Length: 110
Length: 115
Image (cartoon, rainbow over all chains, first blue to last red; front, side, top):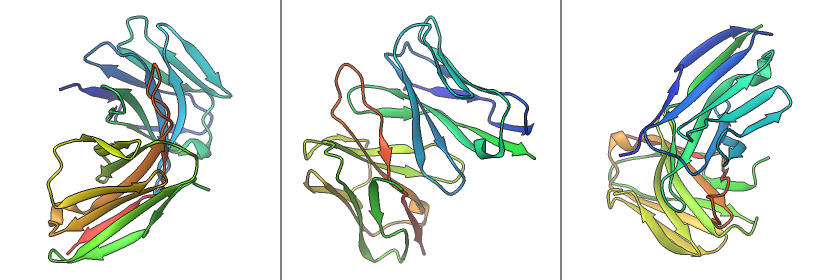
């Protein structure tokens, strides 16, 4: 079946450092979504990318969809303690069927 | 505040008990989902309802029985669960899919423990 791997699995950064997580699919994607889950919380939708090579920014967060639509990245500039959580990419495998990536857990040291 | 409400927040039950998880949304979404999430793992899709009809069942054991009484409510009936079913159960909703699947809105989840 379709696999969606994220790297790294864990990342510890000092506050103010940058952070990047990568999402890789074994198949070509129609679109990709990113979610953030705070410790003890639920996934919260961040963004959706649909076009090859698309880049979207939300304040300190930059999202990119690969040219071949098989991978994506999320980059956070100058991390803050509020960025702590697990970041998941999610891909669709048919109508209403979502597959979440393995996730990257981010810890920010003050 | 979440726009998808799940009750109860915590549930402890024995393997012979019958219980139900409830989920409610008032965003007018016509697609609703149940996910299971184990600690330090991604959410795993269990069931999807679209327009109150079951459209996806990811080969979930029959001890889990979903129900969608109307467009705002989603239930998950539990019976004869196993200890390995202990997990966080998340409900989500989304607008109907167009060219692409739409973003999902998640509830806070029910943390289920099976004794």
